Image 1 (tube, rainbow, N blue to C red):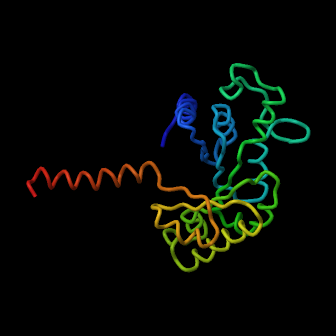
Image 2: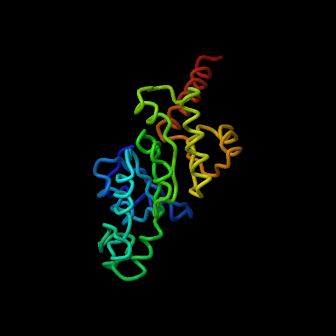
Image 3: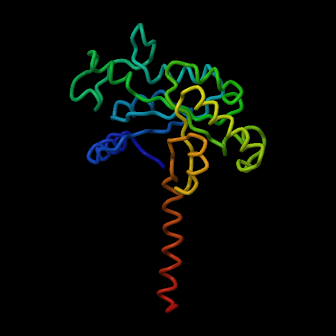
Length: 215
């Protein structure tokens, strides 16, 4: 959904009150600005999307890593919420940036073709399979559940697990987790805000209509 910079701060405040971790998924366009502002707001993880190549992934890692000689990142000193009223720049600030979990959507042919090279990169903490995007990218839009696409999906998860990189699966309900659990997957993204709202309104709206109609 849409958000502004104030929302980023407020989302992190709300999550911290309930001891919840936070991850933001950023689009490829303008991802450096959004990712760094989100980290500054207190997000503990960034999920980068639409990477077509190893170089794209390397660039995203630099975005979220501190601007030091040893890290080679782009994130410098900034007065943000994560610096706790200071200007940042001390060693604790640098370490907090290093602790940011960097995740990547594997959803383009170039990423799948170079998957092992991507998984070997220092800074790739987690991957997530994007079947809908991938099927569109290879000219098979809407076919994410076809045998061909499921074979690619299986390859992505098994390769990540084999190479010791946590993989996350997108599911719509807990029942759908069983298939991935059997594969060794332990991280899940369940639903999206729009889908959750739509399903709730659809089911309860239909039931309310029956009540109002005396059925």
